[in-house]
Image 1 (cartoon, rainbow, N blue to C red):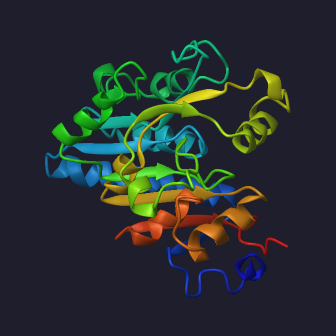
Image 2: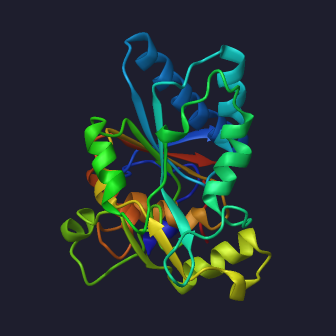
Length: 271
């Protein structure tokens, strides 16, 4: 595809999703953390709640977020974090929180336990999609008045959260998919095993529960960060490719306020 050959200098020109170039990975993650803090600060000032969809991948924004919250003494008492997804056992139950792959475990270890307890949101406002009750997180989002910002990244298959491609569906049908349990594609398992398990592919889960495309696309804003070498191809496909359920990130081309932060590595020409 011609878009894979777009140079670093030309990336972003005529893109169908706006792209921003903060600099290196640290700058991308700091910008995402600032987006979080700025939104909470403004909503607190107006005594309004804040609702985010949050990923565990990328995760580089969280140390900055925790530091800013603690230093600024920013209350999270009126903030809800709706995490995107979680790995499942073959019986479609959450993997153990003690498992190093657990997103629930990560958030507890690296985010919630690092926040000053006087500032942290209650445990009831830390939501994860539940395979036993997949409708619950969508119901919660609706009752809260919707999502302010959906944060995330782009997976190797173009997936947002674990919304893997379903080329048998139209883009409009795919956009209406809600929270559900599903099988993880081989490409995703291989990429994640390389990043998280040093290539121990057989130990990667086959199943996951994911927040739906409907919930992500319904957010008032979407902010993604891309930073890996293979993101060079992924971000170009997302921003210039045809809208299709074959590469889910392309659906953001229809979103009224989506933005992708691209680091200096991902900005380079794919090949």
